[in-house]
Length: 286
Image (tube, rainbow, N blue to C red; front, side):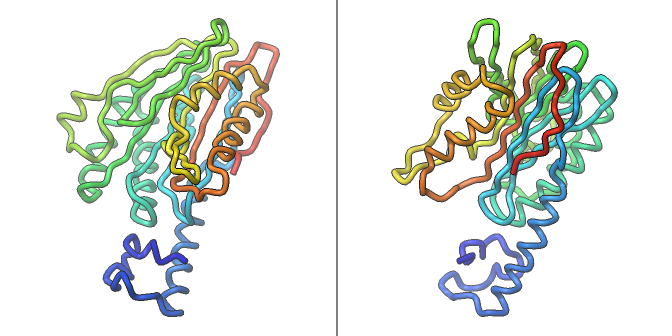
């Protein structure tokens, strides 16, 4: 049944909680969800960017017809690629609407600056005015300098990025300070947000994700957890590029077992390739 979504549907919000949907309301609900789901799917990247020296992969699986996760790749100029993963608080159509505006604002501001913090300061100023209090967006946004292999990263209250260093076979967490988007109108957000630069070397990997990964639960209510993710990432890091991401997804699914998916799952991973290797034209996983 889709009755659990009634609180997220504007047209059916005032319907008593214990009252079942009639046939007309069910069809209306299904129609609205189908349209919202299709619109949202069209906003996500259909193909991965083809960047010399970089293998990049993505996986996205909503927990229901309409999700609140968002990821994107923004070609800023010939040498700079924006990479981001975001998670909107809440579920259903309201979260989808906020995600859509966040996407539009971010794509507009990202191409104006090579500072991810500066771009998100501008995004936050507008987003704060438009969304209702209590809603917010966490985001990890970074800009890759392709030729220098340097990441400039900013986190707005998002999960830390995992970096695997091939030379030492070690995983490190990158989590610069920052407040979620939409909570503060500007001054505190601007004071809080920080940038961090990371030099990548040949073979190094990065992993971005939403909390649907670490909060994935099995039938006993046990979460997958960040420690398990970091351990699995280190174990899988030496694998071929496609096997790394699919291995993470398989491990999360094995942990969940027959338990329902509680939240959207989004993963973006990348690896610095040796000079002779070139990324293949892999479509986004779904």
